[in-house]
Amino acid sequence: MKQSESITKLLESFCKAQSEFPTLPKDKTGYNYKYTDLDTVISSVRPILAKYNIGFMQSLTTLENGNPAITTRLFNNAGEWIEDTTPLPNVSLSKGNAAQNTGAAITYMKRYTLCAMLGISSDEDPDGNPELNKKHSENWNYLYNLFNSYENLFKKNGDAYDSICKALAGNDENLIIQTVQRSHEYLKAGGINI
Image 1 (cartoon, rainbow, N blue to C red):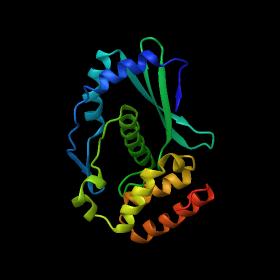
Image 2 (cartoon, rainbow, N blue to C red):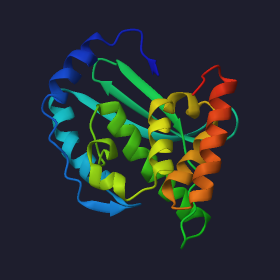
Image 3 (cartoon, one colour):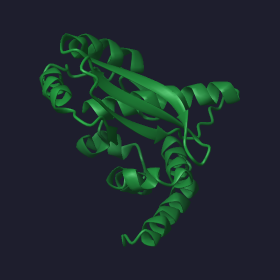
Image 4 (cartoon, helix red, strand yellow):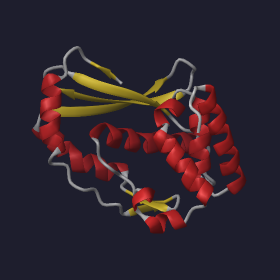
């Protein structure tokens, strides 16, 4: 995460805005879970952020390794800002061309990164929903929890991050098991023993 030299006023205003964010409706369904779409997230938080002179922008950028990413920046009218950049996952829709797959990845990451930056939830938490956990295999749940625990580390390796996102988006048990094994190897190489 990057920030301007001072973020004192931004954080003061952000704390006030954050206390007013509503609980977002999880009324869309995809990949076996419910979520809030990007338009609903934006329309729910933008007026509250504006009330406290906070804005946000999200732009498509390129990482040093050439992979595409989304940068999400919060800023105020005093010129203070914080931002973070997240690589785009590889998305392969069953129906769609390369441009549609890229568009889906952009929308997906814009929703996730904006919600992460604002500290709000836009999808169901499988850990808090036993019924949702039953929809997935034990290996899927393990990979999901592993990913959530070490997401920032996986983000440093775009290939590891992409392969986990792909495995979690599907129902291929063999791919999930292979991804768990590769994730363990990647973490072990980074000095983390699971």
